[in-house]
Structures are given as structure tokens and as C-alpha cells.
Image (cartoon, rainbow, N blue to C red):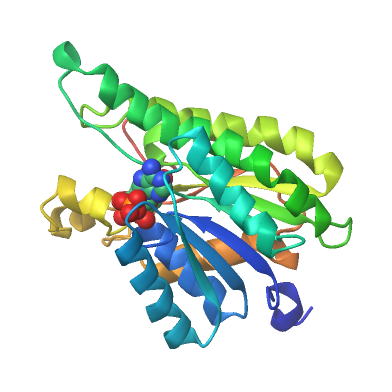
Length: 265
Ligand SMILES: NC(=O)c1ccc[n+]([C@@H]2O[C@H](COP(=O)([O-])OP(=O)(O)OC[C@H]3O[C@@H](n4cnc5c(N)ncnc54)[C@H](OP(=O)(O)O)[C@@H]3O)[C@@H](O)[C@H]2O)c1
């Protein structure tokens, strides 16, 4: 019952997509600080390689960058193949890379729709498919492997902005999480989702000119999310403490979804 047993993730191997910044970096930092070897991916190679070096140095733990575009099947196959060439098994797959796109309904482009759906939904399915053998190799009934899909509160609430496929893609992520959880729990791979609220990142920042004060004021907790909030939840889901939690979508949003009074009279 010691914290060191309940929450230890030491000596595990993780793959974090979109680990070069934002929420992916927060989870990667939490893993590295607690003894996990982490593979991170993103498209922009220089930023990814620099981030991996920065985090490896900071936490004195191996962080390995693999540049790739996960919105294409070629990118997904190349990524999983590279890790297969280096590891016999992995413990955690964090499907975090995602994109948003906003346009008025009347002129919303097919390009924007496909970009969001390909990365946010299709890539999560095929990454899980391609990494299934590696996850299985490290999975046991006592110590299951884990998949965490990063959804969004926009997949639970109706978003205020005109980001039509984004909310739909995240609702799909939450449901795909349940569908994959039902299949993979039989193979000792536990699939869950995290639905973040506002966390400082390139994605959210560009929507609010990197001024989070208004968003913070509107949040029930009077702030935006921090790396500790995100890393702590991911560590819980990957640890012994989270080994009976399956198919869940857990919000990390300061209470936006669960304390909304919009529907109350
Ligand atoms: N921040 C929030 O408030 C918030 C709220 C709810 C949900 N989320 C979700 O959290 C996840 C992370 O978002 P974030 O806010 O941290 O965004 P971010 O700062 O824009 O980071 C996105 C990451 O994904 C990578 N990426 C983007 N397109 C990719 C592609 N085609 N192939 C491979 N990697 C790709 C990016 O690197 P490159 O650009 O170099 O590829 C980057 O590392 C997303 O799924 C997002 O929907 C975020």
C-alpha cells in the first residue's frame, strides 16, 4: 500500500506521440522523471530532437526522438517499425498527437475536415493496431500494458468555436477508447482516455493569442491545467493504482464538464 508500489512506473518503456511540446511533453516529462524510457514523435525533426535532448539531460533518463507524420499510413508504419527494430516490447502507448481546424460552417473545407479526422481518429486506431504486438509482449494479468488516448472536453461538451470536426473527432476518440478497451482487456492491455480542458500549448495558445487569463477566469478552478495535473493523471492510469480502470474517459479540466450549470434551472 506504499505510494512507491501503488504509483511506480520505473523501468517501463513508453511511446508518446506528439511528445515535442504541449500535453505530450508534460506526460513525457512525468514519465522520464519517474524512470521510464520514452520514445517521442512529431513531424518537425529539429524541434523534436532538441526537446528529446533537453528532457534527457534534465531528467537523466533516455528520451528517443523519432520524427514522422502520423496522419499517413506510411508514417504510422515507419514509426512502429522503427520501435520494433529497437524494442522487444513496450508498456505504454500514449496516443496524444492531435490537430484542430476552424472555419465558418458555410465554407468549411474538406482539407480541414480530413486533417483533423486523419490525425485525431484514424491514426489512433492504426497506431494501436500496429503497436499491439509490442504491448502484448510486455503485458501480463498482474501487470497489464496501457494505452491512453488523448480526447478533449470538446468531445463531451459543444465547443464554442467553429471547429466542427474537432469535437466530433474527440467524441470518436472517447468511443473508440471503449471499443478498443473491450477487445484488448482480454489481452491484458488496458485502454483509457483523458479528456483535457484548457492546457497551455501551441494549439490552445494560437486560439487565444497566448493569453490564458480569460480562460483561467472562466474555469471553476480559476486556472488552466499544469504539467503536474496532466502527468499525474497519466502516471495514475499507467501504474498499479490504475490497473482496474478500463475504458474510461477521465476529464482533467478544473471541473468544466462536471460542474456546468447550463442545464440546471
Ligand atoms: N491544449 C489543450 O488545451 C487541449 C485540450 C483538449 C485536448 N487537447 C489534445 O491534446 C493533444 C495535444 O495537444 P496540444 O494542445 O499539446 O497541442 P500542440 O502543442 O499543438 O502539440 C501537438 C503535438 O503533436 C505533434 N503533431 C501534430 N501533427 C502531427 C502529425 N501529423 N504527426 C505527428 N505528430 C504531430 C506536434 O508536433 P509537430 O507539429 O512537429 O508535428 C506536437 O508535438 C491533442 O490531441 C489535443 O487535441 C489539448
